[in-house]
Image (cartoon, rainbow, N blue to C red; front, top):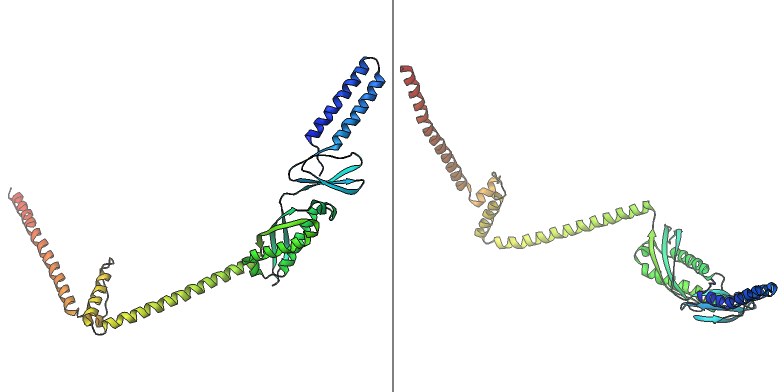
Length: 320
């Protein structure tokens, strides 16, 4: 896109000022026609100066045509052209340019419709070819990228697209770069930003992933139980020829059960006999019963003097 430099405008004004001064002097001296002619010449010179002087930025390259034919590539900096004879149709930006493109409702290899958003990073490496070999190279590279994306999607499974984006990015970069190379454009990289799938399929995949996790959890739980059983089998070998150790272990288990804020522990009679706790349990119950009776007797003894004093008081009031 052609632009006007402030330097060219300033130079055109500098050229116009002397002619304007001469035209004003002619009118002041009584020669109005001569003043008008000088003013017209000055204006024409200013316009020609404005058209001849061009300034390109550091990242710009300018294609110059002379009478419709390619003449040269100018820039960056100050350059001049011949007005009317030379023309500047293209100002090429040689920086890296980013462009987003997408493919909507495109079927994958396993017939799943997806929407894919991607970003393209490219730059012009040959401004002459970009200007002369293709019309509107920016639009052309956009369409080339979109068609390449659709081709890659149609050859890729959905699972590979969701998990192997780096491979797809590299494939897209090669395809697009090959198509745009005759235009003097180099594609540096392509990055897929997002892959959208239908909501129903997304729910089904979520359920599948959840079922797979549950299966793995059950497999891990079963393996853990197997390992615990193996350890119990190894531990049981320790108690085979050592009944004292088994007895101590049983006592410890009972003690641990009583520690858990429990006042009642139900133990099978066979276990009690095995642990030889029958006599101990009976003695413990008898001791608890005797303690209870002693506490009741003490309460009764303390209550008798109180009743006697109350009776004496009533008798004394009667005699009065």
